Image (tube, rainbow, N blue to C red):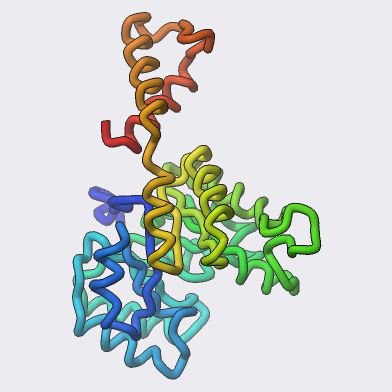
Length: 280
């Protein structure tokens, strides 16, 4: 298992686009638009179409370095069938839907992004993140709320803060991000289902970037450009970050100030993160 993480996969860019695995005609188009394509064998495919989806997965290969395959929950018969199909491909990164136990991640024997989207998974997120072949975490709101017996993860138009997440969803989002950081794994923010709500999407991207998320998943090609732009630092942010890094070198890592702002170790690491996102 340790060999899997010798060269652990990380998203080559921030926009991760879901694509139904039973629509091979969309595979290459999705890959042209997004940084990563998530070929979905779970929710995007009806149970009756999953055998055909697995056949399509095998018969229509695309760049394995930019593909994640979402597999069905470990409690279903489709889980084993999905893994058997993946074994006939060059894909070696999976997303475990409704991850609830460390064992379900271990049993994939593949580099795995654990999707935390059930009450049980949320309460075990730290145990799941600690698994050696768990390379990243993503969280999901809709299955989470369904598992609570609720009706909506977001506030409605007639409520305060319309369109934003309710507190329980935000708690799981925060817990997932913290667990990923605690165990040195990358974190992927959840999808924004309201495709027309560009303003809401952009706000969530800004927050994800501020909290150190590596990527944001999406369900529509029109969302990709907003994600890519949101994760790219502005020119002013890059200038500030370079000044901080250079100042730290001049002061031998000690505390100093730039433009009235005190700079210490945490601020230096934030500046380094900005430059890493910029590729500078």
